[in-house]
Length: 446
Image (cartoon, rainbow, N blue to C red; front, side, top):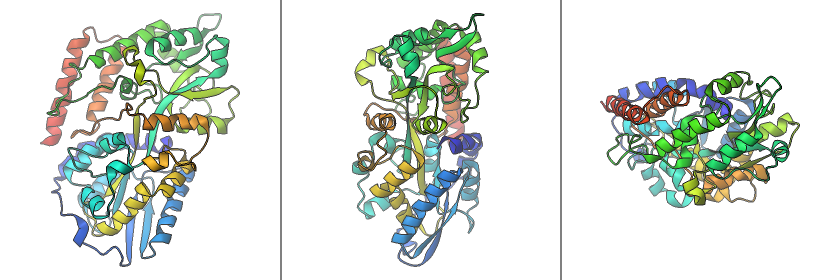
């Protein structure tokens, strides 16, 4: 759920900066280290922190322990990536056996540093064919350069929430499917007060709003961040210019950056009842699958629905795709109980009944092919929009990198300047951004 992920973001930069300094060599696979049928206690660290999330995890572990009477699992909640990585660097009896993270773009560091064990030998040994179990996009963000050091543990997909009452008032009969339709509808949905200030905007495009980080919106263009040698290619990627140019056009069509930013500062907290979509200050809003549950619990006084995010006009046939991310789980390189740890990881990630029950409990997207099509899933049609997005072959996740999320942060900082009109030469700015990302990657690898 997003509350835990929002807290965890605060530690991502520190975690990523220190991860490769550990200098861990890849240990041998734990196939001969321990007997998973012998009595053992595992330690499982995770980042979930709200009462509902922790109950869902504890219920999952209880189901596992019922199946594996010899294994006891000590669950430690609300662990940040920074804390986890410090423990893995130190090793010892206090280090966890099973680890999870909300930060998919750190997987490249988890794999390349050797801190998280390679899971492919465990998959092969127990007959799990990962390509048959997990959607390709989710496998892509849990591996790095051919090493599967993590597996997906539920996913998040991003789509469009829209106010049906506002659409009806504006004479709109369906949500926008292309970027040109999004700009047109945003203008039609914008309303002002008598003094000219905003009462409602069609969509708030500003990158500082809630989940509006540039990488999530950029996903609709299906960009290539890196070339075959791992070099940043954003300046050479035509989609980058198209995306940032459209962002400026969407801002200008609704009144300009200054007025929109001023209006944004009146919005309430993202996770509160004063969220701008809840209070009808925005008519359309990009968010994850969890928002629907929050809207129902808040009993908002208007009709709403969900749809995929619009796509570029020259990619209209890919409508239905979206940005994907999620929780990843793995085995600590230092664990002396890796076979037993694998039993827990395998249960949490591949058991269809378990994945469905966990997904329903915290209203996240299931992370296996079988679970995504299970009749036991939440039947709410507004939620199933996000299931379809997760299964769309054009949906995009961030590529793993040796520098973790530093390239995402660099893109974000650059995009802030672009939307504010502070980048006079987009081509020159993008070339400088590529150079910065490459320097950060080189520093991480050394």
